[in-house]
Amino acid sequence: MTAGPSVRSLRGLDGINLLMSDVRDGVGPYLSVFLKGSLHWNAGAIGLAMAASSIAAALCQIPAGLVVDGTRAKRALIGGSGLMVGTGCLLIVLFPHFWSVIAAQAVLGSASAIIPPAIAALSLGLVGRRRLDARIGRNESFNHAGNLTAAVLAGALGHYLGYRWIFYLVCAFALASAAIVTWVNPREIDNDRARGGEDPSHTGEPISFRDLIGRRDLRIFLASVVLFHFANAAMLPMAGQVLARTHPGQDTIALSACIVAAQFVMVGVAFCVGRASAGGAGRKPIFLIALAVLPVRGVLFSVTTSPYAVVGIQVLDGVAAGIFGVISVLIASDLMRGTGRFNLAQGLTALATGIGATLSNATAGFAVQWFGYQTGFLYLAAIAVCALIFFAVLMPETKEAATGQPEAA
Image (cartoon, rainbow, N blue to C red; front, side, top):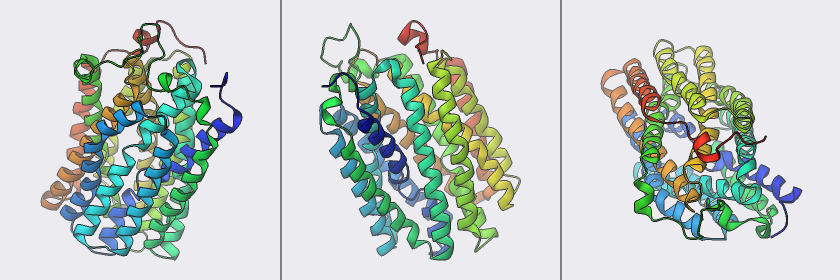
């Protein structure tokens, strides 16, 4: 291993985050618009289709974390998972029937489970813990910049050429991401450091899964992640359905504008959070800001169907998601210092994300079908209030516990 990561490896990591941003989540909320606007599925069936990916991802998260902790072939895992996502998108557009869409969504969820922990492991293995705060902020900035670019392209393609071209766009990003991952030099990755072993107390062997899951702070954090995504995941797909129903023909452009607005904000928020955390700011107050935004967003969505208002409200998602993308990785890193289980903790975090997203999409879909969109949004806002109270009362600050003092930027 060399003394430090080369410029080429760091640029490769930038490129991975830029291109994988659109690949790891598949077509995301565009699937909801495609199923509603082109295939005329009902809200319950759309909720099940959206939940299928989350369920598959949830089932694969722990195995994914264990694989990333134990393997040196992290680049191959990222590239192969991206190509599987591209294949799943092709299956959806070529065979748009209920069970084939469910199966393809399961493939997308299974493949995407490996990408976040593998990217986090590459980052930690390349730059080390003391530079991780700023690196994760940079990762998320490139991630959101990629989402912003993809949303602009998806909106234009969907509007002028049809929904199907959005799926082809994801395939193109998947091929590009598989190529850019080769820029990272595997000899520059410290594999022990990449799994959270960078600590004087670490003996070289990771702690057992039983001891890991017995940590109270980790359990509270994972429960908070479940509640965050329970409140958040279904909001944008539901807003897309509202636009498809009330403004047919403008839904793709409006949904892309929502994503562009949110991602534009996320770029700046992620960068600022990374810099603030590297400069000594605590994790807990930053995450509380993200949680406080969610109920406001849910209430505002419940009182309007205007495309312009929906786009404006979606800016709040840029704040919440921008914070979560950085802080969740840093809290996991704090909690796992010296355990050798950083990537497993990333898998558990993604599992909690999947559980929350599954609950959100499945239950909110039927709430909308039975009671209407306004009730669905208020239901999610109520979950968000519970998440805010839970985290504020039970979760301790992790930064000082992990480092003893603020890290240098």
